[in-house]
Length: 327
Image: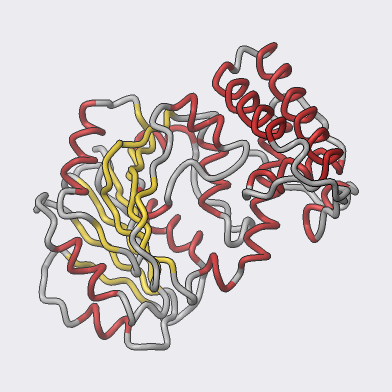
């Protein structure tokens, strides 16, 4: 008997100390236009009122898992993926808000496109003191894979999985890639399953001082840089320390300083483009060509010399003293 026989979709929401936002997150799921789902809430050792807050919701669709320990986000997500009894699993974060039609729209897309393994959506970024910002992402697999050379192609809490594809490919989050487990997952997944985004704003994504990307910014950057280096190496390239440092800096929106810096950036992206074209990776080649054009525009805007300083785990990896799993 198939393991995917317990309903249409499981909403998987780990949480840790989300008391300030969890009520709105839970309500946004319970108020979905799609009524048939299991809402799996996994508490990761919260020491605030998060757990008691969720326990006050009287809804049989909510299943709460808590053991008092802290295992980390990746471990909790993997547990949820292993235990889910439905074919589709939707991610949710305890500090975000799902649009009322989110589940219905993603289920309709996934059922109409059974070859897709992971589906995300566009989203609205919410940050105190700033107006909401509409965020769009590429839609098709080729462009999403190209984007994964530089950054995450999904907003993590927008994704829905087809577990049949994940299980067949042996895909789960890596517990070794702390604070960038989602980006690591997407980069590996892009070589094994089909990725897609829906061009609809289906989530309100909060940015605040207590989220992981704020509290652990440096660790997240270092882990993400390792993923970027692995993505470049998948093209059969062996970048120098200066090349990979430049690549990673541009990936997070940094523009190389000075004429020499922009010239080096343009040369690097053109080199990537040539390799991608030889391998038939047209979307990757187009992305690199666009970045080369951008570097050319900036070529004479300032004259400060560019200094590359690969730090932390990335520096150790470049020196051959550390490795990152590629599967």
